[in-house]
Length: 582
Image 1 (spheres, rainbow, N blue to C red):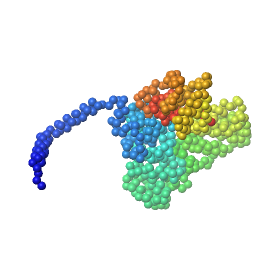
Image 2: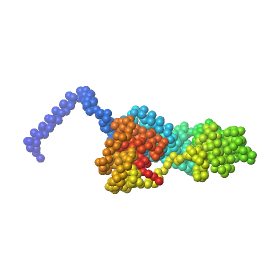
Image 3: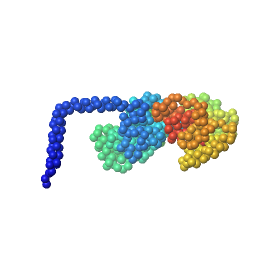
Image 4: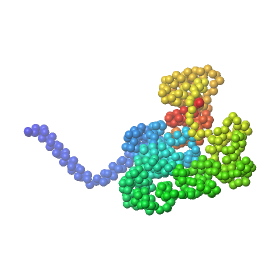
């Protein structure tokens, strides 16, 4: 096939152009490094001219390409999240974003966490704390991922959130101090003499964790579950890695059946060594003292390894009292010991006069026995008060307060003399975790009316709730003496934000101006320091139940949560604080 003249001219042109490009490239190859430097300078100028302002929501993308407002698909979490993001809850679950801490300095976080750690949080404030701290997020400014992670882990361990710790392990693969969580869960189960459950925790150990303590426990569990071949293989690896020791070798070879006996050495430097000592030594005996570790006390108590053979051993009884006061020995067993201390009949009859002549331990035992024998309510109360003073004298009140509360609650309340009612009331401990009772709707008061069902009953539509609101408001408007309270305002503000039509005569702004709102909290909303804001509310609620908060406090909390668009946290406050409950 022949080419036409026009095609020949076209091909000649192409060859000419290719030759020109090649020559040009050769000439420019000499200055290639100069050209790259110029390109880098140009790039830097472009970046400088397009600097993101501090208040820009896109600033976070300079740190990480993930949009802070995205909803994280649980199935893709491992692929999406960067290694430094650890938590349990997706940000959208509580209207947070990945950038919830990004504008808050580390010092602020350290300070408020330190204060919160000193509080005995109520159920609501604890729930808010968990929602906030265990949400996947970017780090606070000037804080390492290890430090932020330690704050979460240490709080969960300190507050014995075992289920939450397991959830954390399930949702996060490899992270700093993972072995610390696993060892805590292992030790917790050993201390409770629940080895079967403890051995299940070894499933959290992966190849990234190199920890002698956990590897030793894994070997023991394999023996415990009759998997000696696997245990032997793991033990050989442990020795090759230089992670075994003479004590463990001695105990584990006995458990393997390789040796017929083991030495009688008891090692109490950690719980695993102590446990291995207790199960391999015949007629095991151990006398704990003030220096004995708390967790070993717990194991001894759970495994019934504490035996008081001599009731005259005052020093041992005192050590047991101290352990019970530290919650490492069962408090009820202290009172069982008191019952065993012998007193003659005359001493029991004259206990109120004679107890002061005895040392405090025997005095407590005497008054306790007298209390058990007493049938007079007035006398029982007197003896309980005396017993309280005796425990207080030796700084052992923690052993006693629950017993006193339960004993007072068992009394016939109608038969308590008026002069003792305040004493009884003062010493009865209310349940810290008060369960919310059944809601009683009262359409005469707006914040207690059927309108609240929009928040308390998930199947209530906005259309139905709007109708409820209108009907209730018609009744209230007729009552010229009706006082529009702070709680009413909290409800109406929330309804308006959630799309309800509010009558014009309810001037929300005018009503709102009557109540003060902390400027420091409003500033956090403006600065988008949402994580710190949530922790501030944890601190404000603190140890209180919502029912203990005044209406003005409830209002400003709801108001500011509305401003921050933290709707789900706001709903928790509304559900807990506004309805009347049976």
